[in-house]
Image (tube, rainbow, N blue to C red; front, side, top):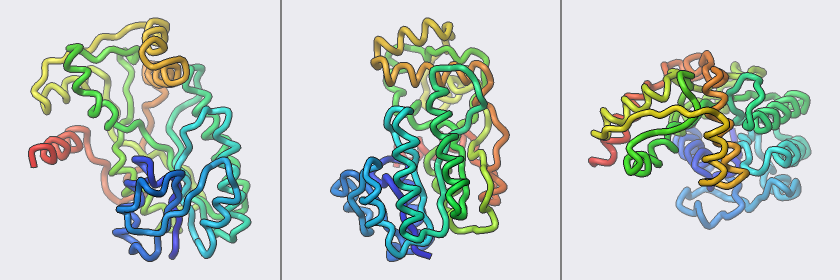
Length: 285
């Protein structure tokens, strides 16, 4: 099977590409990226391709059997149209199967729901494309919290509006395992899968951080309105609105989902303490 993975210069795309190379062999994997120079070290064929250009992907998808479409990062109102370019290019190129990295989330009215809705539109476009498909809905990555740890430690706390809500976290490495199976295993076709791990509160996340990073953080909950204002000041209107919306959805229980990870991979998703243990072991190494 020859496969193509989009956006391999991004962190999730790269993680999936590395796992796919190990599974299928580098001669059977191609990647696309807006800036191919960033991923020369992957040692596979990389096509320069922008989600705004269908023609870029038509060129990249020649003789490709399966395409893994990594969800774009543009503004929500632009994403579904950009994804449609990739879907149409795949159809035009004779691609048999499409796999999509969507996101978990029950319907709500947070400032993140525009992102949820754009992902659901792409899911429908893929289902209606005539190609075989498998759709994963990603839990929230835990890596951004790990990467932000130094800032948390300076502030002495994690502050957001999630309150007592639980969030089903995952990691990019765990997702890469799942998506490789969705590419490989046609018996999983035609379904949508929640790809996430255990659901924990922000207080539990703080407790994990204190244990593994030997810190003394506390968790402080604020109202969604207060957090949105704080985020806009610190991260600007667009990104601040997205981040605040994520924690509002956590607060309302909309990111606490039943996971299909074991159904896809035939093993349990790693617990948060396992992911953090591997991370700290890697730092020590």
